[in-house]
Length: 489
Image (cartoon, rainbow, N blue to C red; front, side):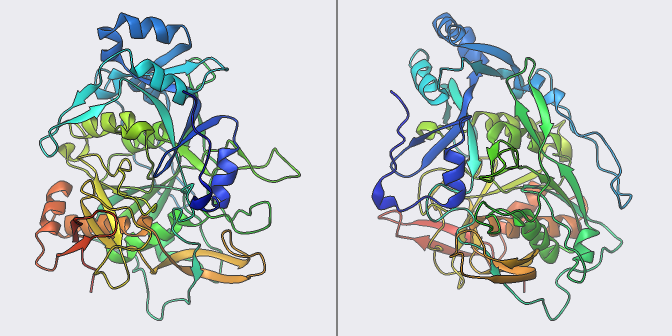
């Protein structure tokens, strides 16, 4: 019954971030055959319909937990006020959840201190049938009646997400990002680690001028009602050994990649870095955000959904491979005609880097464009990429070049003796860097065709004559074929 904490020896060592996250007392985890599912120990997400259908489920739940409100209520209290940043750019206002919309049908409960969300989810599920979520593309996705609040981190497996540490790269000979220009633009919201402005002389002026930074928020369920706390901004942070931590600059890299491919784009980067992991041996009060919860990411997706494209940089497995409850509800809400862009905003997410065919979320949801990675030549799956029928396309995520931070010293994931010299540029591997290419291509089409719905731009992109099919035979005996979104010339 208890979560399995035994990681097989043949899986190899955990990456450094996973080692720290799995030691966090506020989290719990379960080791499966292809993934490590991580969740907040105290939180349960419960279908209100399941509670209405089953008095037995409600009675059992009330014995071990207290209600904290439905997600529409919880999301309604966490907002980033419309404000002006240092450059004088005004943030767009937050989107409000529908009081009686899909989010109102998921309740948040806080478990007693001695309880474990993975244990309780499995126990309580046995008391009621699964819910049924239908969609024209995939007739049936079975949603759980009860679920933990899952956590997304850099993968617990050796491959990790990103798949490898970044590698220094020289500055480009020609301008990588054009100055902002007049004319129609598309807006891309990037949900990632945040954005780091690089000091002179390696400042990314043209990128800085396009980016509006919005703080992400983490949810504290110990209070009733729950409270939202701003996440720590991204920065050049070091691990306890003095190495550059494995997530610094991740959002900066993605923002630069999108701006490079889609010049007529304005970017909003939401920095999601939960602050609960103690970081540093000598001063436990110094903390870094190395993980984020699905509730917090889904909250940011809804709140900042006034965009043409939402680029979600997170990917995670779920307990017993059920779909993510918060993301299913948010996507249902974003498809309402009253939602931004008439319910036709494009949502893009990476498939993950665990070399697995298991579904990862939110990429596996029907209304999310899940992106796997090809190798450098584009003719096969990248060695690290997840891949399966639940993905929608692939793009090159190996040896990708983009904007990074300034750093001289060792990098997490490499030997301490290796000193790297970053001067604002890097190459990196991961599906995290394949997905933004698809987001950028959609944004580019929207900017060039005012009035074109983002979801229609995605369909147009798929019909491009340069789209080729890539089949992977390494994760499935019969192979899975995905359309490859070509590189820009």
